[in-house]
Image 1 (cartoon, one colour):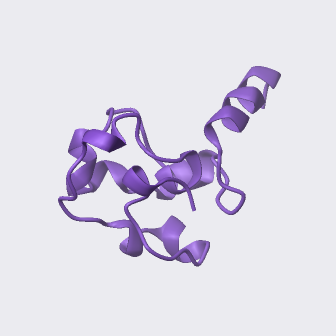
Image 2 (cartoon, rainbow, N blue to C red; image 1 turned 135 degrees about the vertical axis):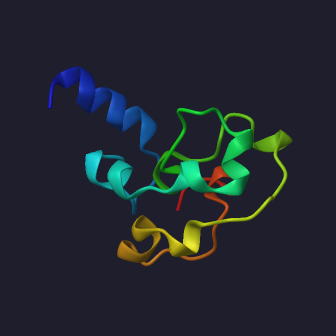
Length: 87
């Protein structure tokens, strides 16, 4: 991983529990979530990166967090990380 990629990952990762890396991005199912349609399309792994840039304007339309491999692998609780911020 280049220095630039490491810096970009560090900036995106806010969680001390869930890393923001290729593995978690591969497991992430945020794009399939009904609430994700209100997020910026390139935003994923909210449990690591934190809430969406427009989280204050979003409505809860359903949450897939608890069925996600990332959620289960890191024994997370709650959900709606796109609205509530990182784990």
